[in-house]
Length: 195
Image (cartoon, rainbow, N blue to C red):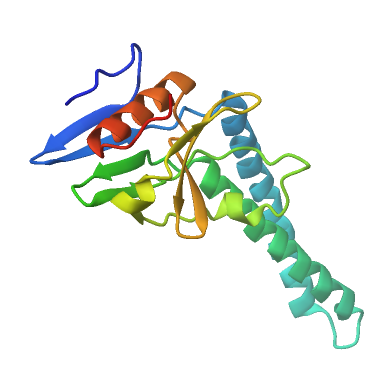
C-alpha cells in the first residue's frame, strides 16, 4: 500500500517492479559556506606565492645557510595548503541524497554525501567532514524489527539497529517526513507499531 507523501516534501519515491527507491535530498548549505570557499580560493593564491618563494629560497641558498627552518616552514606550509585544497573541494562538492532501496528481503541504505558544514569548536577532528565515508548498508527484515522513531530535544530520530551499529535513517528529512517514512517502512515490512 502506498503512503501519500507529506505536503511540500522534497522526498521522491520511484517504483521498479516490487522494489521502491526512496530518495531524500539534503538541504542546500547556507551562502556563507560558499563565501568561505571563495575566501579559501583567494587564500590559496597567496599560499601558492609563499610556496614558490620558499621553494626558490631553499634551492638558491648555500648549504648550511639556515635552510633547516625554511624546510620546516615549507613542510608546514604545504600541509596547510593541502588542508585548504581539501576544504575548497568539499565546499563546492555536490551533495548526494540519502537513498533507501526497499527490497523484499529488507532495505539497502546509502547515506549519500551531505553538503559541507563549517566545523564548530566542538567538532574535532575535522578530517571526517572533509573526507566523508559513503558505505552502503544492507538491513534485513529481522533487523528492521528494531526500527524506532525516537523523540529528541530538538527533533525526532528514525533509527534501526544493524548488528552492533545503530543507524540513523533520514537524517536530512524533516520530523514530518521521518514520521511518514516510519509509517511507510512499518507498513511495507509488517512491523508492529507500538501504540
